[in-house]
Picture (spheres, rainbow, N blue to C red):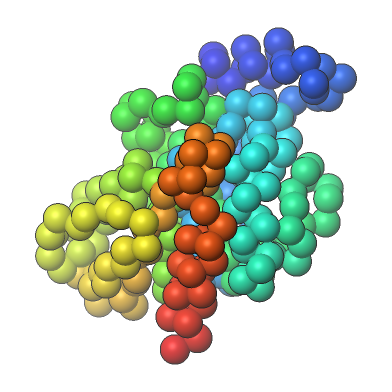
Length: 211
């Protein structure tokens, strides 16, 4: 909390004339979404500035361009909350709701924010979940295990493009968990994450949802 508010006060020089959001970020998207995308946390000068997940930063530039190509978004860019972006069949959330130092939320912060993710899961009941990065991947599985929502608790391996069938113990609908490397600027600039990697994965998710 202290970090996000300090960033909102001091700002980045390029955005010094803007009013930063500087508060916890809600998820957003299609309330009838069958695909839930779980990110890591708001970027200090992205979502923490604009007030919307993956909006106003390089990660969002990459992600929304791919979602637009796959038919999940009505436009390929996301600059501010009022830019007309609409998601179709997708809802975007995160493991942590406040911008953390060094883009790495603590376990304590993730635990504090988990009730919001739980509430979104209960409301949406998605058929597919896409975890962006290992922290989101592990956090989602831990949430399910802690709630006793898995019939079994195997060790799921995180790697880009992997998918896992999750059979809930509650008798609810099964979920397919997909994994992706986070579209951070560090990953996209080094080539660890490419546009073609995301295109292939989103096509795979689209085929699953339409099956």
